[in-house]
Length: 417
Image 1 (cartoon, helix red, strand yellow):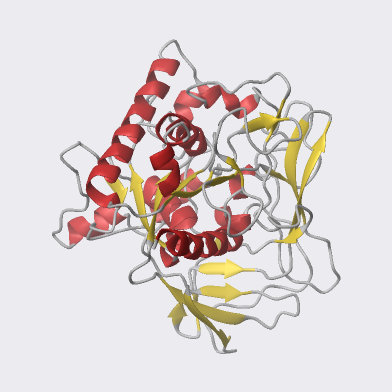
Image 2: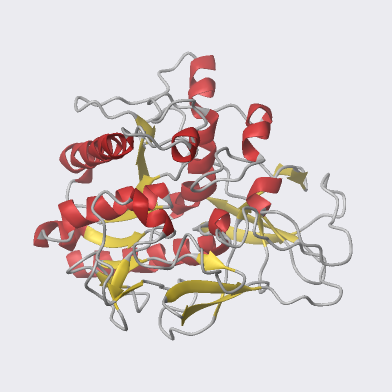
């Protein structure tokens, strides 16, 4: 990432946080909130979507430009390097919030010519009334692409297709057409992947990224198009698919959901998987994540095996050690600082994480110890104990994940040059 850190001016228009640690709902929800309550996004977001910045489509229409690129294969692209308005290319400046209260500004921007690509499948965000969403690009999709995927633009070209996902309403009112609609959604994702491979890939390495419902779509894509295909595996830099219950045999790094794609255990490892679900306390018996065949697993197109299996946990903050690591979170925010728009906030050395396994449940335990005088707020369980920190699975680790992809990209280029 092309970035540097500069001191925060005391004359900035955003006021410093009040003294004293406060618990609050997700930072992602407290700022430029994206919509959807069921599998991926917070309940307050729908109420604030209308107040958010215009979507990429709206901005493009205002400029008289075609806001999307629909390919011959029929792919409607949410993010694509050819789009005149691309939510995955956005302002990456961040307010660095320190425990001392002495904040600074980190300036960052997308890379000009990154050597690899990223293929991103977004989580449940649609508030449309039906079982499955149509392909109209709305604020919910542009916002989540910005919040989860845009920072990867510093290390890869981001491609993200629209797909007829199961909506928030559809997840709350499951009917007889659910499995057919789920499969139809995946068919569009797979078609977009084939479109990308035929017209855009050109032998470049690619990272597959998804979250929640997007992770289950990405799992099926990896399983059917990549895992069993040696050539496709060779182009896969890695896959980042939190919140989707990938399984492996107990105590193993490969097998179960995938037969060839193993867990990432080193920053330079290629063709590997990063998967986890984050909690700030031990998940309850009814958890939606961390148990094979349980909870979110019902969104898998092809169910993963359950006997003798555990849900995979890969800690992106401690790949080499497998122990505890320091998180590098990035959350959306609003406001300006030192005369600049600063749409992100990061809190160094606030959170730590460690993979845990207990009573058949696997999770990534996130801790943020209360320290006297530290003014920074911490994320909380917006949707309750069964969900844990699901809404923040990506943003809690976003700096770690982008850094990992950058390291893997260099390793890929070295081995494929």
